[in-house]
Length: 232
Ligand code: IPE
Ligand code: IPE
Ligand code: MG
Image (cartoon, rainbow, N blue to C red):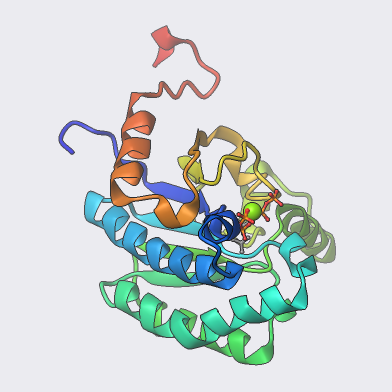
């Protein structure tokens, strides 16, 4: 994609797995399986294009209120495939970080995430953040409490370091699939100047070409950060 400005950090709200499955008369869990596989494909494409960080919204704090049957299916998917799939992507020098209140996950899944984090901690430059049991309000409240415990006033800069994404730059582009036009409690602090891109496609059918299209749309945006065109 010559001449196209590549975002350094892309965050993805992967939405529409359930509706994709329902339309095909399949159980929702099958939609999640296809969604997970599609996510791996998109990560590979994004890194190939030169993206440095990818944040994936995999499970929100609110999603924990879904029926136990669906949560169990999601947890099993994670249990059975996460290490293998992520291992494939991370083997190319990608550092994995879990963001969210991981303590809300079953213990064996917490361990899978911690092991992946440890195994990839040596890598610099490229990163994947998996948002699980993640809620931006929870993240902000948690950061406020950390600041209060330290007894120090915060600045915009120091506060952002207290968030789950502390070591990662803010997203340049946030993509949401699945037709909804909202953030659903995702990266509310970090998204201040992100470019937003919404796709009507359900996540399992969001192709590499669709990702390219989103990046091309990003490339055409003028990011003013409050300034005038003349100042840029
Ligand atoms: C997104 O797909 C994945 C998760 C929230 C885990 P959904 O499960 O929300 O799919 P829809 O929105 O019901 O189609
Ligand atoms: C957002 O999708 C959360 C994830 C993609 C993990 P939801 O399907 O939970 O969002 P709402 O409920 O439609 O806002
Ligand atoms: Mg949804």
